[in-house]
Image (cartoon, one colour):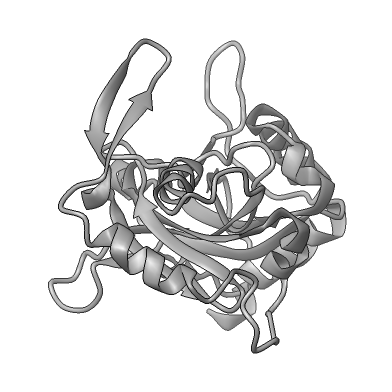
Length: 251
C-alpha cells in the first residue's frame, strides 16, 4: 500500500465546518472521485485517513493536511483533478504526494509548528489573496510594539485546558512574530510536544499594548515538521516531505 499526503485549502463558509464534518466530507469525496483508498480490516471497515492538526472553527487555511493509504496507485495529477471535480466551493485540493510508509512519517506525529496570518476581522478577505497595497492593515506602530513584546524576558499567561489551568511561559513557543502589509505573521509551536494557539498570543499582545477589543481573523498558512536534515531551516512544510506520484505511462 502507498501512503499519501493530501494538502488542501479551507475557506469561505466552510471555515465553520467542524473536524468530524470535514472527515465525512472527504470520505464522500474519495468515493465520488473513485480514489482507491484502503480500508481497515474487521467487522466494521473504514477508510484509513488521519488529519495532521484539525483546524478550529472560523479559521481559514491554505495549509491543511490529510494522510491516507491507497490500495493501488493513482497519479498525483489525476487524483487532484478528480477530487477537485467532486468538492464544493470552500475546499480545494492543492497537492497529492506519496510519503514514507513508517508510522513516524504521519502528519499527526510530525507536526511541530504552524504559521498564521492575522488580520482585522473587516479585512478577512485579504488573508485569501495577495495583499498588494503598500499600506499595512494594522497601524505601523505595531512593528515597534511587537519588538517590545518579544523583548520581555518571559511572556507568562494563564493557559486553560479541559481539566485545569496553569501559568505558562509562551515566549519559547513563539518562533516568529512580525508585521507585514497583509497582516501579522505568527509562527508558533504546534503538535503533541507543545501547542500554542494564535488567539492566545494575540490576546496577550493586545493586552500588553492596551489595544484590547480588536476583532481579528486567523488564517493558517502552513503546517511544519522539524527539518530531518542537519543543515538548513529548523522546519520544513509537511508537503515538502512527500513526492509526486507519476502516471503509469511515466514509469
